[in-house]
Image (cartoon, rainbow, N blue to C red; front, side, top):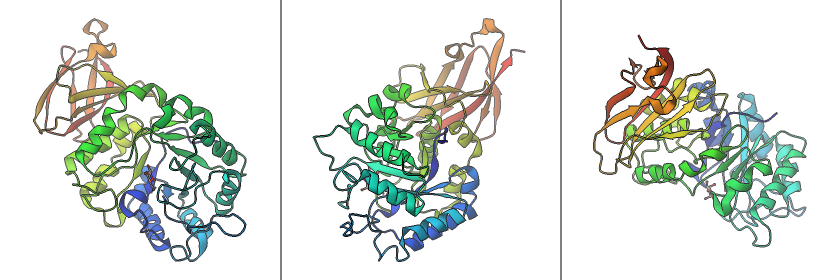
Length: 378
Ligand code: GLA
């Protein structure tokens, strides 16, 4: 049975790239549990690119680099499983991975068998060096079929960056999530750039196959492989909130062994995570506010009848902005006798909407995340 809500976990790429080994994976597994992240739902520990030798063995099998993983991958998987976590790995639909290690092209069934033998539960599958002879849809379907027939339940995480109209064919490949954009970097511009590419693909995300906005940069503070200028805590909070509201998988990318308190607070906000993991997995809608193009509001109807609303200030030059949100867009005109009781999920504050309009001010690069109850107008 496939997971029906967005996968959550940790992935090695954003911080560590090729600098990975068994020790790092063990320590990260320990920390996922000790810090309470696993209890919040972050249960997939995924090793990204650069884990193998540059050549397959004489039988054509992938080989874990013995300098990085001296006890082999099965031992790593066993350790991860012993912590109650699931184990993820990485390969590529092309002849080579993006970092130049062997890809799974024409080895799909054998590699799926290898991953199953090692105890892998999740496969991130990249799109570098793919042949022009075979379509992306065929390449992903091939690995989808290989995994579905390998004797182990392995989730497929497609990573074709939205190329070749991925959204049109990805659901048919057996993938459980699909990367909708190029790679994230640890900067405010990168975050906003990814958000700007989501609206047109809202209808394609949902239960069973989620639009993946890429791994989180929360808490990286400019350190590591994709670390650029880094972001402020406010920006990281906004980043986390949009990813959660849009129903993206939530894969942590910072070094959780040295996480600061603010990072932990952001990543473990259970109310925000509950929005992301809402069992109905409904489509996000964009709400009209007014002319500022960088002030955005989005909503999502939740399984129990509540509504999640997020308002985001993406203004580049960092101005505070006033928001007037008319809730009749949600079907709550005053004549219905209903209004919204809004629970701010970062501050805990509760307010009730008057005159069908929610008016507030939103600081630079900040966000407001609410879980709203539909209540009678008093
Ligand atoms: C691509 C992917 C990244 C990462 C790297 C590894 O760029 O989009 O997420 O997996 O490859 O080389």
